[in-house]
Amino acid sequence: MDWGSNLPAILLVLAVWAAVCASLGLLVGSLGRNQAEVAGLGLLLTMAMAALGGAWWPIEVTPDYMQTLQKAIPAGWTMDAMHRLVSFGDPAMVVVPHIAALAFFAVLAGWLSARAFRFD
Image: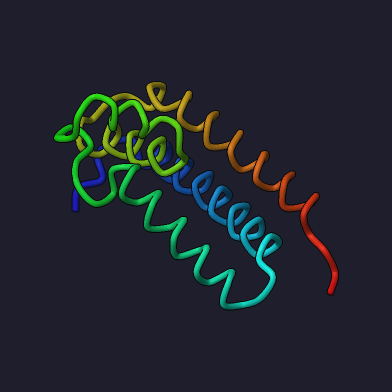
């Protein structure tokens, strides 16, 4: 696969995406009351973000409201950044807002999970 000329930017997007996933995983784990509930909630969240974020099909083929909704979730920011860097060959500076939004999601989810975490 040709990753294009922006490999450092791609790795940065993926690293911030990993931080989002880790923070959301901690949040889901902190909110669930048992292992089955956490697994179900995690699966639901994963599938919803993949579908709405453009991981199942190109978001460009969906109606305008779906393309707008994509920007409300972390998976949408990640998929848009990856498409811009890999598929369209945009320069790395184009994804700076994407990285900032993902970092915001990671910090917010991390803060919420720290508030919801309980020692049982």
